[in-house]
Length: 509
Image (tube, rainbow, N blue to C red; front, side, top):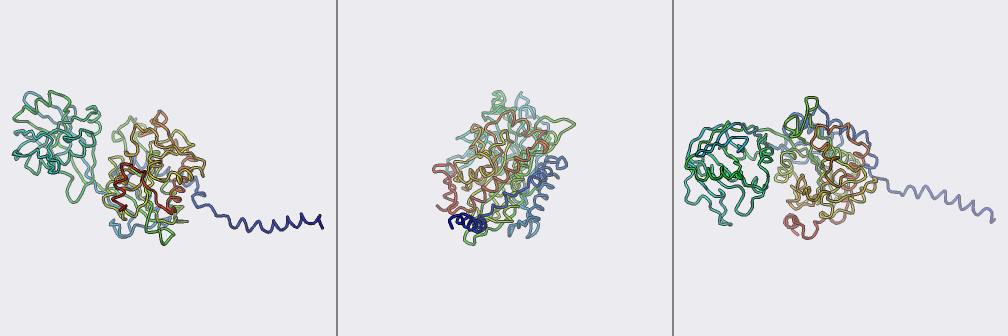
């Protein structure tokens, strides 16, 4: 009998093996994602025919349509109540005011003649030929809480107002930009016919001219443009003779050909995948990536040639949109416990405007959003890793690392900290509201020649993409989202983070 025991034991084990294999949990659908699908999305979105997907232009609209139809094909549903073209729209209309490039003009103060495009930039306004008294009004601001009353005792009707840039508290570029429109509006409401602002930020004037002298877009709120059409000039305030002449002058000649303004529309493309757990599906994870890029020729802001003038934006940010579409396909097949809201955002390249608009006009309650996984980047120089801005700030390191390892990728936190990258993509629009919001980025550890070779260059074409890496990146992004959406407890900002107070206000904790 002893010699038969091993045979009986082996037979018994063989009978049990199918039972064990049947109990094994199958991998979620993202593990079966196909490189051919990722490549097809990339080759369409970064094709020459889309002309660089510049916000509000035809290629941008085609990209939006492509994303919407992919949602429809996969079974992603429109967000209920989205006030788009109809009740089943994937499109959230984002209206923009588009200003043309600053034109010719002169400002004459006493003996000084200041030339447009060299000494000053027209920030807003129609064609004008003005000769009027000039009134100095400090920073041109009113704020009772801070005791700012720069127009006290001044009569601005029919006059040109001269103001300093920024506020009494700060002269940072961000604050100068943020307060500039407000200054123009206050001055116009008080009867001023033009505004001259002495720009004094600690950045080179030629950088200011490049950044603000060309075509400019801003979100259009309501029926009117964002600010009266009175001329508003930024003058090089670091040039002492200009500042002296303007402050000393009693009267100024202000001539400008104006900046032509028109209204254009672009769209955030939004779709919803309801969660599988009835107790958790009211909460959701927000997935975002911008699909716009910088366009053609001069609009790209970088060198180009007659042979190639299209800034295709394969890395920035067709890469992130492919990750969104990979997630959409996987989650429609097997939804996570919480719902997933997917939004392809417009207007990132012109100032994060699509995400800012959505944060101000959300289609779903922001306080039900437990996490935003944004995807954006300048490109990659290391295909063994993903890089995550805010990895240690936003409470989901374990899930992101687990998901990345599943596809053979490491995780590198916050490359190039001197660049302040966390606050330079669409995630910051949601972080400011209090939502934990990292940016999941193709792998790099620092900005170097490998990154800058293609970032915002006409060379950033699909043919230069490592499609095996694109697939792994998109799979890791999707799986990390699934793990976060399935968590028992929601991610939290690190204690003391600058966005933690906003989270307490949003979530009531």
